[in-house]
Image (cartoon, rainbow, N blue to C red; front, side, top):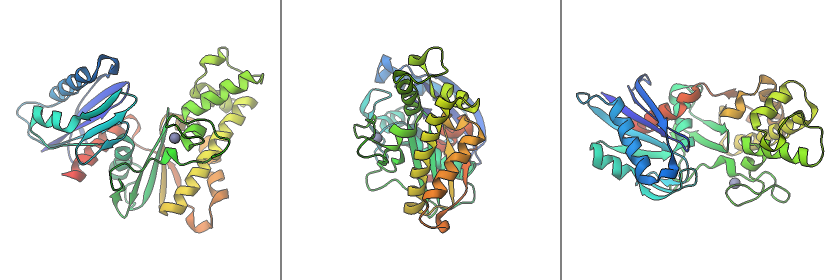
Length: 308
Ligand SMILES: [Zn+2]
């Protein structure tokens, strides 16, 4: 018996057939091309699933990870800015096509589940997962369960406010969210601001600088880049200390593109978090995610198994 896992992102669709132990038996990927509209994307999801699903193989359930607010009970994607979607009944559409139970969940929550079941979080009953990439997403496992909240809208850990008065505008409309202070987008913005101030930036094309450029320059010791990365690490530490205080987890897992930066960056985050812990009792290991690019698929698998 196998499961279908789908990782629907703004850039790529990945689909896989997996067994319950987290082994990927077949996989396929294609570009999402959201600009072609909802129907075109749904058609690509369906054909990706068909590619990994041999007709003689029975499937227990499907899990689909989607960015953006959605209702996990109905499988309706409420809004997904990266996809340009509004009120799309994705679970129903896939059920109509395949007649297999289909569960749609927030991609960051699913990633937390995936790391818990198959990755860095195995054996923990309480953990917090953060993905730090273009934005910041998060998921919480508490008492051995995924925390989704009353309407399935939790846990938006990237939108805790860490700089309420003077913070920049976040993609969500508020100011000073963790995402606006420490995501890849925030790091690139700080780099452009440094250039606009006249700081001696090391990038040949400052308006096009990326978070990866800043991280690489900071790793080489560039002072402007180092200040920016230090600032991101500081706010991540502030956020993590807050999560320690609220959830009292035994582990913090950090994933996403920004965490590809060297160990010095992780060390800074750990130091800033420890500085702000209310008492040492709250302090736990802060580790890197283990599943890499497969976190979305394995998270979708874990979610399908959890919901079934
Ligand atoms: Zn926000």
